[in-house]
Figure (cartoon, rainbow, N blue to C red):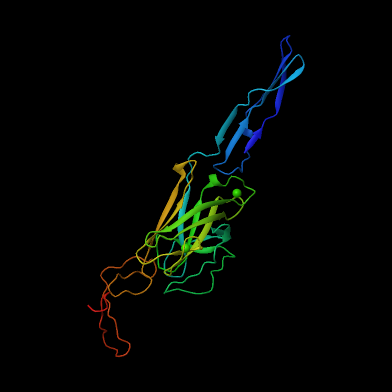
Length: 280
Ligand SMILES: [Ca+2]
Ligand SMILES: [Ca+2]
């Protein structure tokens, strides 16, 4: 962004010298100017002698980058209430979100593809969703996110956006999302992501994961790293693994001290159980 500065003319002395001096000014930066924008103010200096223009002299520049001070943002992961937990719950509106695939595209609608509560019908986002904070999900459920930061609500008349990157530790899949403010003046930016145990390339709007992985969401503010935010979500098992852990169906947390008897559906008798190698 370049801010041409209006100039003042002042005659100097009997020799008839005149200088035209530009004034650097930060006021040319609008409130909604994106963070990281470089602003260049140029002070034009021209001069006259004996009433004659002598052309342009020095043109010094002043450059600065639009940044902000330390903020107190909060990045939170949420899961839709399916009646499996006691909460606490909040009702949050998730109106819009996009993923980067050159250009930005609307995110696929959130769908629960988990074993226990799966439903192919997309979750209705037309009204606020009843959600609870989560740091552990069952594989296949969509994760909802909020980034709350009043300092990023730079224009109270406009819905603004922030970028957040999601990554999965086990699969390496990564998605860059554009969170939309859920009202012109809320300072609450929202998005969601569907999770799958199927292969999913970077930048397709869903996140490949697997049991016991960790999904990380990161907000990075290049102009002030003290405002960086991150949240981790552990992934529980999606299908029964005879040699694995048992997880609470509501929270996804591993259970301890549980005895489980597998029944052979054909005989009604306890089933013979094999390990991962299908032999032992
Ligand atoms: Ca706003
Ligand atoms: Ca993907």
